[in-house]
Amino acid sequence: LIEETTPDSIQIPENFDSELKMFAKTARDFVEKEVDPLTDEIENQNFEIVKELMRKAGEKGLLMVDIPEKYEGMGLNKTSSTLVAEEIARAGSFAVTQGAHTGIGTLPIVFFGTEEQKKKYLPKESRFYIRKIIALAFLGSDEQFLLHSEYEHLLNRANAYSIATVKLSSG
Image (cartoon, rainbow, N blue to C red; front, side, top):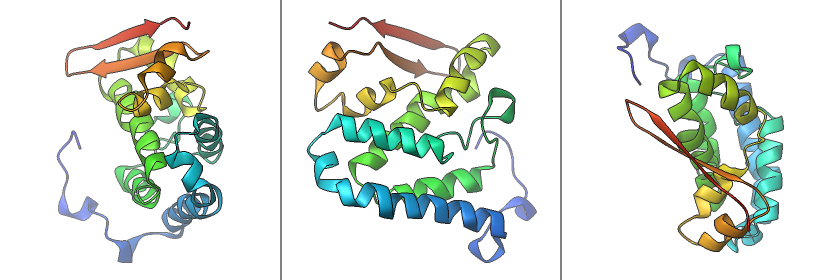
């Protein structure tokens, strides 16, 4: 993604090892057993269910794929990350939440955060504690949840130069 690759480093499904296949199966099973049965409630913006599902996804390692081991993540490659995203992608609004958590909440810190920011936020991210990213995923549809939730909310906006952290107090 941010470095040059060689043809021999490209993965194709026929060459996936058993560990990679098992990780994809973990994500697929999570969606089928945990997310799919709750689709109606998720689509009707039941944030408590989404929060609980994000917690469970974190327990299964599905939120820490891209986080380096140095910061308590799994430090897996982009193939692993892509397989997780592919399996979760069919999960409707939950996929948006998980994608926002990883793509908007975690990866900007991994790629562009200072060492201090990485030490402060990534271990929490990898352990699913920053529930604020859930609010970000639903911001467009329910700003009041973001502004009046009992949680502080952290929105990370990243570019190649900096990460700006905005805290909104509850109430």
